[in-house]
Image (cartoon, rainbow over all chains, first blue to last red; front, side):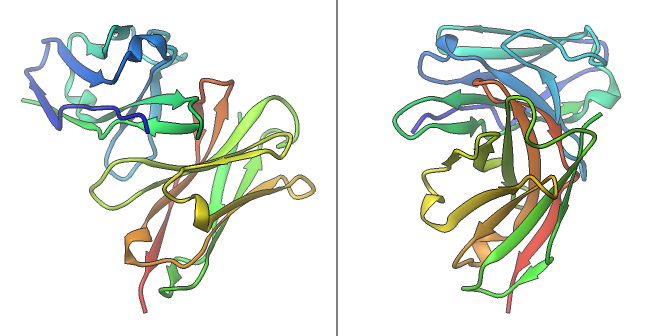
Length: 109
Length: 120
């Protein structure tokens, strides 16, 4: 089955740029979606199809995907961005399924 | 605006069957090309996809849970349901229902989640 690998944690100072990676075999050939989850809340879609932003998501959130790594970039990080972030793909193999990365805890210092 | 709401017992005994229902409001469950999904999250851990049912009724399940999972839809009630059999403590989690769009499974709408504890 397909595996997505995320770093468990990323720390960044307010106003700086955070980059959260999602590794997978030839992930650049798949569409990657990103979710933000704050404690006690359901996940919220922040990036879809690698780099598109849903309405209501700040332009500070952006995404890219190439080769074996997809990246979620959060510019000008704010305290309110502190959350868990998950990448996700659809694996259309012989046993198709949704695959989530293990999640990355973003800490704003 | 589509809204989803999970309901069902919060406590299930080991070896029994976990049953949850998701009620969809703000749109018909049988219209459009959507995948109605179940996702779970054990306390302090990541998200795990359980399975999905398409508008047509076709299903796909997580290979690791496939032997124990059934997802069905009741269009007359605008609901879809999850049954997970032979549960153990490892099935204790917050269970989310969600709506995904297109073949890439963009999950744009989530329920608030419901905690199910497996314990005797």
